Amino acid sequence: MKAARRPWCALVGAGPGDPELLTLKALRTVRRATLLLVDDLVSEAVLERALRGRRRAGLRVVHVGKRGGCRSTPQAFIERLMVSAALAGEQVVRLKGGDPLVFGRGGEEAAALRAQGIEVEIVNGITAGLAAATALGVPWTHRDHAQGAILVTAHAREGAAGPHWPTLAAAAAQGLTLVIYMGMSRLDEIQAGLLQGLASATPAALVEHAGLPRERRRLTTLGRLAADARELGSPGIVIVGPVLGAARAGAAADAARAA
Ligand code: SAH
Image (tube, rainbow, N blue to C red; front, side, top):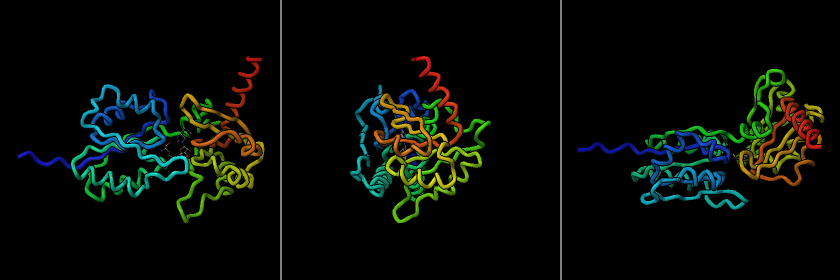
């Protein structure tokens, strides 16, 4: 008698939106899916590339988005769906924006699945904060300017306090680049908090839709962060720190060439 296969589920990083930044492993893992749950941060182009050549028979694709203020698919529902489908023998693949374990609750999903004895496979993706820095042409860590980087979300879970921005400013002043996720609707608060420990001339940048054709970038300073972001929106990444000096120099050179 054939032994029953252990229930299996994969959390796969789709990267920031450019299909060419999907990993080979992500493509291979998506091909195993009988049920594909797609996060709303996954671009159409990525989904199209991931499914190219895949027979649609025997594959269900479900969008489980939560964007635009409409909390359409509660997290608990998504987790229950993943668990029950995997236990029923489906090959469940959850395709998530960026890296599955950088914010975005991949860790909670993995724990819920493992608690039910489901094997969890995790496939890395390029996280949005890294794609944003690359869009600006700067490293998180240039050894002349930064010894490390802090990835931080501006969005605390319900009932919890958000990050203490003055403390993060102190860390940044010691040479750590700040890479801020989920901050686009809290720029006033971020700016005011960071200005308690950093000069207003500290370089800052915003990248909306990093890695996508509609990407938009702003190079600015901490003192002008909120004012300069007015026409930008989500999803976006805020980067703060002297590593951005090189991006400024590059932009100035581009402007001089264009003039
Ligand atoms: N797991 C994802 C992050 C999910 S949290 C990752 O690793 O990238 C959602 C936040 O990620 C958004 O609020 C935004 O700050 C950021 N984000 C996701 N995709 C983005 C993109 N293409 N451009 C800029 N920011 C993005």
